[in-house]
Image 1: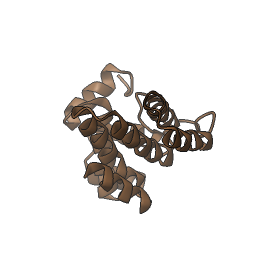
Image 2: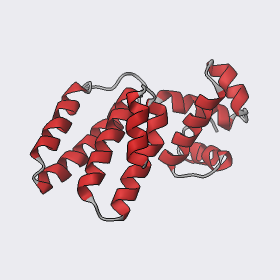
Image 3: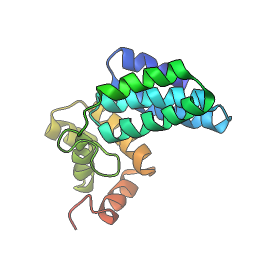
Image 4: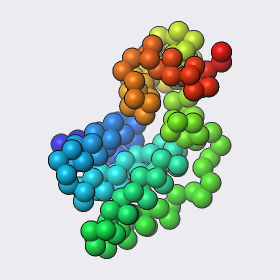
Length: 164
């Protein structure tokens, strides 16, 4: 279900919405030992990351998917992943996906979380919706493997993503 949800979100142009579902699909398929499905989910994850200008993560997911497709002899899927890989810029845009897999926008949101801002305050500061802030926070929590704003702020301090 997570794989399908991610695909639908991507088709609607909602890459941020697709991201957590694509990650969940990778984990779920991996948990039941289905490498082909994991690789397909990685391609969807790569498409979502690429749409959000996180080129490094997209490239990494595509490389992992292609390795699996190669090992399984899934030539058509490998060719499709290779074609997607060719569309990625060879150098990521400035600030895109530069630290800990976070996009430049996620780093902005994280900095405002560290500053103690609420979702509404972050939304106003960045001129985005409250829902978009919540989606960015969900993506941040997943990428840095934390479960709360406090843990995210602590992570930011420990990893030099926030001023001391």
